[in-house]
Picture (cartoon, rainbow over the protein chains, first blue to last red):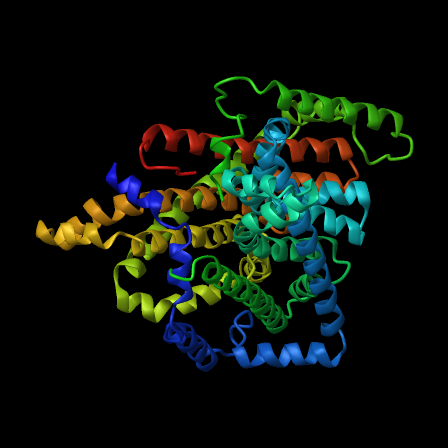
Length: 266
Length: 264
Protein backbone atom coordinates (compact mmCIF):
# COMPACT_ATOMS: atom_id res chain seq x y z
CA UNK A 1 0.00 0.00 0.00
CA UNK A 2 2.82 2.37 0.82
CA UNK A 3 4.20 1.74 -2.64
CA UNK A 4 0.96 2.88 -4.19
CA UNK A 5 0.76 5.91 -1.94
CA UNK A 6 4.28 6.95 -2.77
CA UNK A 7 3.53 6.59 -6.48
CA UNK A 8 0.41 8.66 -6.03
CA UNK A 9 2.23 11.57 -4.54
CA UNK A 10 4.86 11.56 -7.24
CA UNK A 11 4.48 14.24 -9.87
CA UNK A 12 3.19 12.67 -13.07
CA UNK A 13 6.06 14.22 -14.92
CA UNK A 14 8.93 12.81 -12.93
CA UNK A 15 9.83 10.53 -15.85
CA UNK A 16 9.69 13.35 -18.36
CA UNK A 17 11.84 15.48 -16.13
CA UNK A 18 14.31 12.65 -15.96
CA UNK A 19 14.20 12.42 -19.74
CA UNK A 20 14.74 16.12 -20.22
CA UNK A 21 18.03 15.80 -18.41
CA UNK A 22 19.28 13.17 -20.86
CA UNK A 23 22.83 14.22 -21.72
CA UNK A 24 23.97 14.61 -25.32
CA UNK A 25 26.54 11.85 -24.81
CA UNK A 26 23.58 9.55 -25.27
CA UNK A 27 23.61 10.34 -28.99
CA UNK A 28 26.80 8.31 -29.31
CA UNK A 29 25.19 4.95 -30.28
CA UNK A 30 23.10 6.64 -32.95
CA UNK A 31 26.09 8.49 -34.41
CA UNK A 32 28.20 5.34 -34.40
CA UNK A 33 25.40 3.40 -36.08
CA UNK A 34 25.09 6.04 -38.82
CA UNK A 35 28.86 6.07 -39.42
CA UNK A 36 28.97 2.26 -39.63
CA UNK A 37 25.99 2.38 -42.00
CA UNK A 38 27.78 4.96 -44.17
CA UNK A 39 30.91 2.78 -44.35
CA UNK A 40 29.19 -0.56 -44.92
CA UNK A 41 26.58 0.65 -47.42
CA UNK A 42 27.11 -0.65 -50.92
CA UNK A 43 25.29 -0.77 -54.24
CA UNK A 44 24.46 -4.42 -53.52
CA UNK A 45 21.81 -3.33 -51.02
CA UNK A 46 19.76 -0.68 -52.81
CA UNK A 47 17.28 -0.46 -49.92
CA UNK A 48 19.98 0.60 -47.46
CA UNK A 49 21.47 3.71 -49.09
CA UNK A 50 24.22 5.45 -47.09
CA UNK A 51 23.23 8.52 -45.05
CA UNK A 52 25.18 10.81 -47.40
CA UNK A 53 22.82 9.75 -50.21
CA UNK A 54 19.81 10.70 -48.07
CA UNK A 55 21.01 14.27 -47.92
CA UNK A 56 21.85 14.31 -51.63
CA UNK A 57 18.37 13.03 -52.44
CA UNK A 58 16.80 15.71 -50.27
CA UNK A 59 18.80 18.49 -51.92
CA UNK A 60 17.85 17.14 -55.36
CA UNK A 61 14.21 17.31 -54.31
CA UNK A 62 14.73 20.84 -52.97
CA UNK A 63 16.52 21.91 -56.18
CA UNK A 64 13.56 20.62 -58.19
CA UNK A 65 11.41 22.96 -56.10
CA UNK A 66 9.24 20.17 -54.71
CA UNK A 67 10.46 20.01 -51.14
CA UNK A 68 9.61 23.56 -50.03
CA UNK A 69 5.91 23.63 -51.02
CA UNK A 70 5.43 20.13 -49.60
CA UNK A 71 7.01 21.15 -46.31
CA UNK A 72 4.90 24.30 -46.25
CA UNK A 73 1.69 22.34 -46.80
CA UNK A 74 2.52 19.83 -44.07
CA UNK A 75 3.52 22.53 -41.61
CA UNK A 76 0.43 24.64 -42.26
CA UNK A 77 -1.82 21.59 -41.82
CA UNK A 78 0.04 20.72 -38.64
CA UNK A 79 -0.20 24.16 -37.09
CA UNK A 80 -3.82 24.78 -38.01
CA UNK A 81 -4.77 21.37 -36.59
CA UNK A 82 -2.74 22.08 -33.48
CA UNK A 83 -4.52 25.39 -33.05
CA UNK A 84 -7.97 23.82 -33.44
CA UNK A 85 -7.12 20.95 -31.08
CA UNK A 86 -5.77 23.23 -28.38
CA UNK A 87 -8.59 25.79 -28.46
CA UNK A 88 -11.44 23.33 -28.94
CA UNK A 89 -9.92 20.79 -26.55
CA UNK A 90 -9.49 23.43 -23.85
CA UNK A 91 -12.98 24.84 -24.27
CA UNK A 92 -14.65 21.41 -24.25
CA UNK A 93 -12.40 20.22 -21.43
CA UNK A 94 -13.40 23.13 -19.20
CA UNK A 95 -17.05 22.68 -20.14
CA UNK A 96 -17.06 18.97 -19.28
CA UNK A 97 -14.87 19.42 -16.23
CA UNK A 98 -17.04 22.11 -14.72
CA UNK A 99 -20.45 20.72 -15.58
CA UNK A 100 -21.44 17.36 -14.18
CA UNK A 101 -24.44 16.98 -16.48
CA UNK A 102 -22.43 17.87 -19.61
CA UNK A 103 -19.85 15.33 -18.51
CA UNK A 104 -22.49 12.62 -18.16
CA UNK A 105 -24.05 13.65 -21.45
CA UNK A 106 -20.86 13.30 -23.46
CA UNK A 107 -19.21 10.54 -21.42
CA UNK A 108 -20.07 7.55 -23.61
CA UNK A 109 -19.19 9.40 -26.83
CA UNK A 110 -15.83 10.39 -25.31
CA UNK A 111 -15.15 6.81 -24.28
CA UNK A 112 -15.76 5.58 -27.80
CA UNK A 113 -14.03 8.46 -29.56
CA UNK A 114 -10.79 8.34 -27.68
CA UNK A 115 -10.24 4.61 -28.18
CA UNK A 116 -10.96 4.83 -31.93
CA UNK A 117 -7.79 3.80 -33.77
CA UNK A 118 -6.60 7.02 -35.45
CA UNK A 119 -6.22 6.34 -39.14
CA UNK A 120 -9.49 4.47 -39.56
CA UNK A 121 -11.53 7.66 -39.78
CA UNK A 122 -9.68 8.88 -42.88
CA UNK A 123 -11.32 6.69 -45.57
CA UNK A 124 -14.81 7.50 -44.31
CA UNK A 125 -13.98 11.21 -44.08
CA UNK A 126 -12.64 11.07 -47.64
CA UNK A 127 -15.92 9.55 -48.79
CA UNK A 128 -17.95 12.24 -47.03
CA UNK A 129 -15.86 15.34 -47.63
CA UNK A 130 -13.53 14.53 -50.51
CA UNK A 131 -9.83 15.38 -50.68
CA UNK A 132 -10.04 18.80 -49.08
CA UNK A 133 -8.11 20.81 -46.53
CA UNK A 134 -11.13 20.86 -44.22
CA UNK A 135 -11.27 17.06 -44.37
CA UNK A 136 -7.66 16.92 -43.16
CA UNK A 137 -8.45 19.34 -40.36
CA UNK A 138 -11.58 17.40 -39.37
CA UNK A 139 -9.81 14.04 -39.29
CA UNK A 140 -6.79 15.31 -37.39
CA UNK A 141 -8.93 17.09 -34.81
CA UNK A 142 -11.17 14.08 -34.31
CA UNK A 143 -8.22 11.78 -33.67
CA UNK A 144 -5.86 14.05 -31.74
CA UNK A 145 -8.05 16.25 -29.56
CA UNK A 146 -8.49 13.61 -26.82
CA UNK A 147 -5.30 14.03 -24.77
CA UNK A 148 -5.88 17.79 -24.49
CA UNK A 149 -9.60 17.46 -23.80
CA UNK A 150 -9.18 14.75 -21.15
CA UNK A 151 -6.26 16.45 -19.41
CA UNK A 152 -8.08 19.78 -19.25
CA UNK A 153 -11.26 18.04 -18.07
CA UNK A 154 -9.42 16.43 -15.16
CA UNK A 155 -7.70 19.68 -14.25
CA UNK A 156 -10.96 21.63 -14.45
CA UNK A 157 -12.63 19.09 -12.14
CA UNK A 158 -9.84 19.56 -9.63
CA UNK A 159 -9.62 23.35 -9.66
CA UNK A 160 -9.38 24.39 -6.04
CA UNK A 161 -12.73 25.69 -4.73
CA UNK A 162 -10.77 28.49 -3.00
CA UNK A 163 -9.84 29.97 -6.34
CA UNK A 164 -13.47 29.98 -7.42
CA UNK A 165 -14.41 31.54 -4.10
CA UNK A 166 -11.90 34.30 -4.75
CA UNK A 167 -13.58 34.94 -8.10
CA UNK A 168 -16.92 35.17 -6.28
CA UNK A 169 -15.53 37.54 -3.64
CA UNK A 170 -14.24 39.84 -6.37
CA UNK A 171 -17.61 39.63 -8.16
CA UNK A 172 -15.93 38.52 -11.35
CA UNK A 173 -18.26 38.11 -14.27
CA UNK A 174 -18.71 34.64 -15.81
CA UNK A 175 -16.34 35.38 -18.67
CA UNK A 176 -13.72 36.84 -16.33
CA UNK A 177 -13.94 33.77 -14.09
CA UNK A 178 -13.28 31.59 -17.13
CA UNK A 179 -10.34 33.59 -18.47
CA UNK A 180 -8.76 34.83 -15.25
CA UNK A 181 -9.31 31.90 -12.88
CA UNK A 182 -10.14 28.68 -14.71
CA UNK A 183 -7.90 29.07 -17.76
CA UNK A 184 -4.71 29.81 -15.79
CA UNK A 185 -5.57 26.91 -13.45
CA UNK A 186 -5.76 24.40 -16.28
CA UNK A 187 -2.77 25.80 -18.18
CA UNK A 188 -0.29 23.09 -17.14
CA UNK A 189 -2.74 20.43 -18.25
CA UNK A 190 -3.13 22.10 -21.65
CA UNK A 191 0.62 21.88 -22.03
CA UNK A 192 0.67 18.25 -20.90
CA UNK A 193 -2.14 17.32 -23.27
CA UNK A 194 -0.51 19.16 -26.16
CA UNK A 195 2.72 17.32 -25.51
CA UNK A 196 0.87 14.05 -26.04
CA UNK A 197 -1.31 15.31 -28.88
CA UNK A 198 1.27 17.11 -31.05
CA UNK A 199 3.16 13.98 -32.23
CA UNK A 200 -0.17 12.32 -33.01
CA UNK A 201 -1.23 15.39 -35.03
CA UNK A 202 1.97 15.18 -37.07
CA UNK A 203 1.43 11.45 -37.67
CA UNK A 204 -2.18 11.85 -38.77
CA UNK A 205 -1.34 14.81 -41.04
CA UNK A 206 1.33 12.68 -42.73
CA UNK A 207 -1.01 9.69 -42.92
CA UNK A 208 -3.71 11.74 -44.63
CA UNK A 209 -1.11 12.97 -47.11
CA UNK A 210 0.16 9.44 -47.75
CA UNK A 211 -3.33 8.04 -48.25
CA UNK A 212 -4.76 10.84 -50.37
CA UNK A 213 -1.50 11.70 -52.20
CA UNK A 214 -2.69 15.24 -52.87
CA UNK A 215 0.17 17.28 -51.40
CA UNK A 216 2.67 17.56 -48.58
CA UNK A 217 5.64 15.61 -47.27
CA UNK A 218 3.49 12.49 -46.84
CA UNK A 219 2.72 12.50 -50.56
CA UNK A 220 6.40 12.88 -51.45
CA UNK A 221 7.24 9.92 -49.19
CA UNK A 222 4.53 7.77 -50.76
CA UNK A 223 5.65 8.74 -54.29
CA UNK A 224 9.31 8.05 -53.57
CA UNK A 225 8.42 4.73 -51.95
CA UNK A 226 6.23 3.54 -54.82
CA UNK A 227 8.97 4.40 -57.34
CA UNK A 228 11.64 2.77 -55.15
CA UNK A 229 13.76 5.92 -54.72
CA UNK A 230 15.01 4.60 -51.41
CA UNK A 231 17.46 7.42 -50.59
CA UNK A 232 14.65 9.96 -51.00
CA UNK A 233 12.41 7.93 -48.68
CA UNK A 234 15.10 7.82 -46.01
CA UNK A 235 15.83 11.53 -46.42
CA UNK A 236 12.16 12.46 -46.07
CA UNK A 237 11.68 10.14 -43.10
CA UNK A 238 14.63 11.85 -41.39
CA UNK A 239 13.06 15.20 -42.24
CA UNK A 240 9.81 14.18 -40.54
CA UNK A 241 11.90 12.93 -37.62
CA UNK A 242 13.52 16.35 -37.32
CA UNK A 243 10.05 17.95 -37.35
CA UNK A 244 8.97 15.53 -34.63
CA UNK A 245 12.06 16.33 -32.58
CA UNK A 246 11.55 20.08 -32.84
CA UNK A 247 7.93 19.64 -31.78
CA UNK A 248 8.86 17.40 -28.83
CA UNK A 249 11.68 19.58 -27.67
CA UNK A 250 9.82 22.87 -27.88
CA UNK A 251 6.84 21.41 -26.01
CA UNK A 252 8.87 19.84 -23.24
CA UNK A 253 10.78 23.12 -22.91
CA UNK A 254 7.46 24.93 -22.55
CA UNK A 255 6.51 22.43 -19.89
CA UNK A 256 9.79 23.02 -18.09
CA UNK A 257 9.21 26.78 -18.08
CA UNK A 258 5.65 26.30 -16.90
CA UNK A 259 6.63 24.03 -14.03
CA UNK A 260 9.32 26.43 -12.94
CA UNK A 261 6.79 29.23 -13.06
CA UNK A 262 4.19 27.25 -11.08
CA UNK A 263 6.56 25.85 -8.51
CA UNK A 264 9.95 27.57 -8.46
CA UNK A 265 11.13 25.46 -5.53
CA UNK A 266 10.90 22.15 -7.39
CA UNK B 1 -3.91 12.05 -18.74
CA UNK B 2 -5.82 8.86 -18.30
CA UNK B 3 -7.35 9.37 -14.91
CA UNK B 4 -10.64 11.07 -15.69
CA UNK B 5 -12.55 7.99 -16.81
CA UNK B 6 -12.65 6.80 -13.23
CA UNK B 7 -14.91 9.72 -12.50
CA UNK B 8 -16.95 10.40 -15.57
CA UNK B 9 -16.92 7.67 -18.18
CA UNK B 10 -19.33 4.99 -17.13
CA UNK B 11 -19.36 3.24 -20.45
CA UNK B 12 -17.57 0.30 -18.91
CA UNK B 13 -19.22 -1.69 -16.08
CA UNK B 14 -21.49 1.16 -14.96
CA UNK B 15 -22.35 1.37 -11.30
CA UNK B 16 -25.46 3.19 -12.38
CA UNK B 17 -26.69 3.60 -15.91
CA UNK B 18 -25.80 6.93 -17.49
CA UNK B 19 -29.20 7.65 -19.03
CA UNK B 20 -28.18 11.13 -20.12
CA UNK B 21 -25.19 9.82 -22.06
CA UNK B 22 -27.19 6.97 -23.53
CA UNK B 23 -29.87 9.42 -24.61
CA UNK B 24 -27.30 11.48 -26.49
CA UNK B 25 -25.94 8.40 -28.25
CA UNK B 26 -29.46 7.32 -29.23
CA UNK B 27 -30.20 10.91 -30.31
CA UNK B 28 -27.09 11.09 -32.48
CA UNK B 29 -27.90 7.75 -34.10
CA UNK B 30 -31.48 8.85 -34.81
CA UNK B 31 -30.26 12.14 -36.23
CA UNK B 32 -27.80 10.24 -38.42
CA UNK B 33 -30.59 8.00 -39.76
CA UNK B 34 -32.90 10.94 -40.43
CA UNK B 35 -30.15 13.06 -41.99
CA UNK B 36 -29.02 10.30 -44.31
CA UNK B 37 -32.59 9.61 -45.42
CA UNK B 38 -33.51 13.23 -46.11
CA UNK B 39 -30.13 14.33 -47.50
CA UNK B 40 -29.47 10.97 -49.13
CA UNK B 41 -30.14 12.24 -52.62
CA UNK B 42 -27.52 15.00 -52.28
CA UNK B 43 -24.94 13.16 -50.21
CA UNK B 44 -24.73 9.81 -51.91
CA UNK B 45 -21.66 8.94 -49.86
CA UNK B 46 -23.50 9.17 -46.54
CA UNK B 47 -24.71 5.72 -45.54
CA UNK B 48 -27.64 5.51 -43.15
CA UNK B 49 -27.54 3.44 -40.00
CA UNK B 50 -29.84 0.80 -41.44
CA UNK B 51 -27.68 0.52 -44.56
CA UNK B 52 -24.57 0.28 -42.39
CA UNK B 53 -26.07 -2.46 -40.25
CA UNK B 54 -27.24 -4.48 -43.23
CA UNK B 55 -23.79 -4.07 -44.85
CA UNK B 56 -22.26 -5.20 -41.59
CA UNK B 57 -24.42 -8.32 -41.44
CA UNK B 58 -23.77 -9.08 -45.07
CA UNK B 59 -20.01 -8.66 -44.63
CA UNK B 60 -20.03 -10.87 -41.59
CA UNK B 61 -22.18 -13.64 -43.03
CA UNK B 62 -21.08 -13.92 -46.64
CA UNK B 63 -18.15 -11.53 -46.77
CA UNK B 64 -14.62 -11.57 -45.42
CA UNK B 65 -15.31 -9.53 -42.27
CA UNK B 66 -14.76 -12.25 -39.66
CA UNK B 67 -11.57 -13.44 -41.31
CA UNK B 68 -10.30 -9.84 -41.49
CA UNK B 69 -11.27 -9.20 -37.89
CA UNK B 70 -9.38 -12.29 -36.80
CA UNK B 71 -6.34 -11.23 -38.84
CA UNK B 72 -6.22 -7.73 -37.34
CA UNK B 73 -6.79 -8.97 -33.78
CA UNK B 74 -4.14 -11.62 -34.22
CA UNK B 75 -1.49 -9.21 -35.52
CA UNK B 76 -2.33 -6.46 -33.02
CA UNK B 77 -2.35 -8.74 -29.97
CA UNK B 78 0.70 -10.83 -30.81
CA UNK B 79 2.57 -7.68 -31.87
CA UNK B 80 1.54 -6.04 -28.62
CA UNK B 81 2.82 -8.94 -26.52
CA UNK B 82 6.16 -9.00 -28.35
CA UNK B 83 6.43 -5.22 -28.00
CA UNK B 84 5.70 -5.41 -24.27
CA UNK B 85 8.40 -8.02 -23.71
CA UNK B 86 10.97 -6.08 -25.74
CA UNK B 87 10.02 -2.75 -24.18
CA UNK B 88 10.12 -4.15 -20.65
CA UNK B 89 13.50 -5.85 -21.14
CA UNK B 90 15.12 -2.81 -22.77
CA UNK B 91 13.47 -0.51 -20.27
CA UNK B 92 14.89 -2.47 -17.34
CA UNK B 93 18.33 -2.44 -18.95
CA UNK B 94 18.26 1.31 -19.53
CA UNK B 95 16.46 2.21 -16.32
CA UNK B 96 18.58 0.15 -13.95
CA UNK B 97 21.99 1.35 -15.08
CA UNK B 98 23.01 4.96 -14.90
CA UNK B 99 25.77 4.40 -17.48
CA UNK B 100 23.50 2.68 -20.00
CA UNK B 101 20.94 5.46 -19.51
CA UNK B 102 23.52 8.22 -20.04
CA UNK B 103 24.80 6.67 -23.24
CA UNK B 104 21.48 5.71 -24.84
CA UNK B 105 18.69 8.02 -23.68
CA UNK B 106 19.34 10.84 -26.15
CA UNK B 107 19.41 8.32 -29.01
CA UNK B 108 16.12 6.85 -27.79
CA UNK B 109 14.63 10.35 -27.68
CA UNK B 110 15.70 11.03 -31.26
CA UNK B 111 14.52 7.67 -32.62
CA UNK B 112 11.11 7.82 -30.98
CA UNK B 113 10.52 11.27 -32.48
CA UNK B 114 10.42 9.86 -35.99
CA UNK B 115 6.70 9.74 -36.81
CA UNK B 116 5.65 6.09 -36.97
CA UNK B 117 3.79 6.58 -40.20
CA UNK B 118 6.85 7.59 -42.19
CA UNK B 119 8.52 4.37 -41.07
CA UNK B 120 5.70 2.44 -42.72
CA UNK B 121 7.15 3.57 -46.07
CA UNK B 122 10.59 2.21 -45.21
CA UNK B 123 9.03 -1.05 -44.00
CA UNK B 124 7.08 -1.23 -47.28
CA UNK B 125 10.30 -0.88 -49.27
CA UNK B 126 12.12 -3.51 -47.23
CA UNK B 127 9.38 -6.10 -46.77
CA UNK B 128 6.89 -5.34 -49.55
CA UNK B 129 3.13 -5.69 -49.13
CA UNK B 130 3.34 -8.52 -46.65
CA UNK B 131 2.15 -9.63 -43.19
CA UNK B 132 5.78 -9.42 -42.09
CA UNK B 133 5.84 -5.69 -42.79
CA UNK B 134 2.65 -5.23 -40.75
CA UNK B 135 4.10 -7.14 -37.81
CA UNK B 136 7.42 -5.27 -37.89
CA UNK B 137 5.61 -1.92 -37.84
CA UNK B 138 3.26 -2.92 -35.03
CA UNK B 139 6.08 -4.20 -32.84
CA UNK B 140 8.48 -1.33 -33.56
CA UNK B 141 5.97 1.40 -32.91
CA UNK B 142 4.19 -0.05 -29.90
CA UNK B 143 7.34 -0.89 -27.95
CA UNK B 144 8.16 2.83 -27.48
CA UNK B 145 5.54 3.69 -24.84
CA UNK B 146 6.40 0.49 -23.00
CA UNK B 147 10.12 1.28 -23.09
CA UNK B 148 9.67 4.88 -21.95
CA UNK B 149 7.15 3.99 -19.24
CA UNK B 150 9.43 1.30 -17.85
CA UNK B 151 12.45 3.61 -17.82
CA UNK B 152 10.38 6.38 -16.24
CA UNK B 153 8.87 4.09 -13.63
CA UNK B 154 12.18 2.56 -12.65
CA UNK B 155 13.96 5.88 -12.45
CA UNK B 156 11.13 7.30 -10.33
CA UNK B 157 11.52 4.54 -7.72
CA UNK B 158 11.75 6.22 -4.36
CA UNK B 159 15.29 6.30 -2.91
CA UNK B 160 13.77 5.18 0.41
CA UNK B 161 12.75 1.88 -1.14
CA UNK B 162 16.26 1.36 -2.50
CA UNK B 163 17.61 2.07 1.00
CA UNK B 164 15.24 -0.55 2.40
CA UNK B 165 16.64 -3.09 -0.04
CA UNK B 166 20.17 -2.20 1.09
CA UNK B 167 19.18 -2.65 4.70
CA UNK B 168 17.88 -6.12 3.87
CA UNK B 169 21.00 -6.91 1.82
CA UNK B 170 18.90 -7.82 -1.21
CA UNK B 171 20.71 -9.23 -4.21
CA UNK B 172 20.44 -7.37 -7.51
CA UNK B 173 17.76 -9.68 -9.01
CA UNK B 174 15.82 -9.48 -5.75
CA UNK B 175 16.12 -5.70 -5.82
CA UNK B 176 14.77 -5.73 -9.37
CA UNK B 177 11.85 -8.10 -8.87
CA UNK B 178 10.88 -7.34 -5.28
CA UNK B 179 11.38 -3.58 -5.15
CA UNK B 180 11.85 -1.86 -8.47
CA UNK B 181 9.41 -3.65 -10.76
CA UNK B 182 6.52 -3.55 -8.24
CA UNK B 183 7.18 0.13 -7.61
CA UNK B 184 7.32 0.86 -11.35
CA UNK B 185 4.23 -1.25 -12.01
CA UNK B 186 1.72 1.62 -12.31
CA UNK B 187 3.91 3.24 -14.98
CA UNK B 188 4.45 -0.09 -16.72
CA UNK B 189 0.71 -0.77 -16.83
CA UNK B 190 0.06 2.66 -18.33
CA UNK B 191 2.76 1.89 -20.89
CA UNK B 192 1.07 -1.42 -21.70
CA UNK B 193 -2.23 0.30 -22.26
CA UNK B 194 -0.74 2.95 -24.54
CA UNK B 195 1.10 0.19 -26.42
CA UNK B 196 -2.12 -1.75 -26.87
CA UNK B 197 -3.99 1.14 -28.46
CA UNK B 198 -0.97 1.92 -30.67
CA UNK B 199 -0.74 -1.73 -31.72
CA UNK B 200 -4.35 -1.75 -32.93
CA UNK B 201 -4.04 1.65 -34.61
CA UNK B 202 -0.82 0.70 -36.39
CA UNK B 203 -2.12 -2.72 -37.47
CA UNK B 204 -5.07 -0.98 -39.11
CA UNK B 205 -2.85 1.70 -40.69
CA UNK B 206 -0.36 -0.87 -42.00
CA UNK B 207 -3.27 -2.74 -43.55
CA UNK B 208 -4.58 0.47 -45.06
CA UNK B 209 -1.36 1.41 -46.83
CA UNK B 210 0.47 -1.90 -47.12
CA UNK B 211 -0.57 -5.40 -46.22
CA UNK B 212 -3.71 -6.29 -48.23
CA UNK B 213 -5.49 -8.10 -45.40
CA UNK B 214 -7.48 -7.36 -42.29
CA UNK B 215 -9.96 -4.64 -41.32
CA UNK B 216 -7.80 -1.73 -42.53
CA UNK B 217 -7.63 -3.20 -46.01
CA UNK B 218 -11.36 -3.87 -46.02
CA UNK B 219 -11.99 -0.26 -45.04
CA UNK B 220 -9.80 1.26 -47.74
CA UNK B 221 -11.11 -1.23 -50.29
CA UNK B 222 -14.73 -0.26 -49.66
CA UNK B 223 -13.80 3.43 -49.75
CA UNK B 224 -12.11 3.03 -53.13
CA UNK B 225 -15.03 0.96 -54.41
CA UNK B 226 -17.29 3.80 -53.17
CA UNK B 227 -19.32 1.53 -50.89
CA UNK B 228 -20.15 3.98 -48.07
CA UNK B 229 -22.26 1.47 -46.14
CA UNK B 230 -19.41 -1.03 -46.06
CA UNK B 231 -16.88 1.67 -45.13
CA UNK B 232 -19.10 2.80 -42.24
CA UNK B 233 -19.50 -0.82 -41.15
CA UNK B 234 -15.73 -1.32 -41.11
CA UNK B 235 -15.23 1.92 -39.19
CA UNK B 236 -17.80 0.75 -36.64
CA UNK B 237 -16.08 -2.62 -36.23
CA UNK B 238 -12.63 -1.01 -35.90
CA UNK B 239 -13.97 1.42 -33.31
CA UNK B 240 -15.56 -1.43 -31.35
CA UNK B 241 -12.33 -3.43 -31.48
CA UNK B 242 -10.35 -0.48 -30.11
CA UNK B 243 -12.92 0.26 -27.44
CA UNK B 244 -13.41 -3.32 -26.25
CA UNK B 245 -9.71 -4.22 -26.12
CA UNK B 246 -9.11 -1.11 -24.03
CA UNK B 247 -12.07 -1.92 -21.78
CA UNK B 248 -10.91 -5.51 -21.28
CA UNK B 249 -7.41 -4.36 -20.42
CA UNK B 250 -8.69 -1.77 -17.94
CA UNK B 251 -11.01 -4.35 -16.36
CA UNK B 252 -8.24 -6.92 -16.00
CA UNK B 253 -5.87 -4.34 -14.52
CA UNK B 254 -8.45 -3.03 -12.06
CA UNK B 255 -9.35 -6.51 -10.99
CA UNK B 256 -5.80 -7.82 -10.79
CA UNK B 257 -3.86 -4.83 -9.54
CA UNK B 258 -6.26 -3.19 -7.16
CA UNK B 259 -4.47 -1.00 -4.65
CA UNK B 260 -1.81 0.26 -7.04
CA UNK B 261 -3.36 3.68 -7.23
CA UNK B 262 -4.96 5.24 -10.27
CA UNK B 263 -3.52 3.01 -12.93
CA UNK B 264 -5.33 3.85 -16.10
